[in-house]
Amino acid sequence: MKQLIETPFTRRFGVDHPVMLAPMDKISDGRLAAEVARSGGFGLIGAGYGNPDWIEAQFDAAGNLPVGIGLITWCLLEKPDLLDLVLRRKPAALFVSFGDAEPIVEAARDHGIPTIWQIQRLDQAEQALKAGTDIIVAQGQDAGGHGMDRGLSALLPAVRDLTGPDQIVLAAGGLADGRGLAGSLMLGADGVMMGTRFWASREANGSDAAKAALVSADGDDTRRSSFFDVARGLDWPGEFSGRVVQNTFSKPWLDNPDGMKAAASDIQKTYEASDPDDFSVRALIAGESLDLVHDIQPAADIINNTVSEAARLLAGAPSYLVNQDRHA
Ligand SMILES: Cc1cc2nc3c(=O)[nH]c(=O)nc-3n(C[C@H](O)[C@H](O)[C@H](O)COP(=O)(O)O)c2cc1C
Image (cartoon, rainbow, N blue to C red; front, side, top):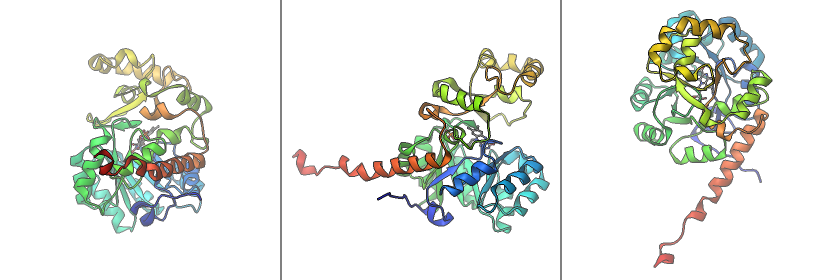
């Protein structure tokens, strides 16, 4: 008999599986978010910096399936019209990350929309808890995309100690299979949010060339830096860096931040002029969990494989336990 994993997250949000799709900018489009929802997970549209037409189109593409949407906190705070639009579309949840999202949590609550706040440090978890967000996602530094420098293995149980048992907490960063799910549950999470693993899915919104590049890279090829924010002309707050597969264009600058800033306009010109599928120049955003990504899979298989592997591991856990008298 196939076993499911039930947690406070699955019960409260009415999903079959404790697996959330990360809101990867443009890659998590309406089609992928809907497929995750259809497969029993929680799907989030990745609206990143927030393009109103694109957002409307993705909600339309998701149809009647309940999907949420994620935006970058500091962008959303700069664009009140965008928040109005998002709230009007009544997402299953509004996900925010990178900055103090308290006013957004309040506005969403007034509209009856649950919020998800991704944190990178314990002091941010305190802020999120105080604001009354519905779900806290603890993101470790091995995550693909923007983040900070704390690892997940202490941060996650520390967040749980901080919140107590009633807060829904999910884990993110470096998790791509059932081992990540089972381990995260043991460390105090109610489920996982995965990005990189779903990027390498059949339904993800990206080219075949990008997906092939994901499969051929591994975690060693990734590193956090602000190089691709400079190259793309994005003005990110200095405390956040992005984990990306580094390439021949980025590597010479990684340990020369001053030189990189001085050369910013040339770097931007070269980047803009390059073919979007030329990953010797372009950013291939992905995390250390590329170590665990060996193929492109349908999103439904990713969810089913993750849950069945985690269930098998959890069911086998008693094999570690022996009676004390055996050692007497
Ligand atoms: C390609 C890509 C794009 C991402 N874009 C965003 C984004 O726009 N907003 C955001 O909050 N997080 C973004 N993230 C980070 C995710 O929210 C999440 O923390 C991360 O994917 C989890 O780690 P993993 O990639 O190891 O699964 C992105 C991640 C990836 C891989």
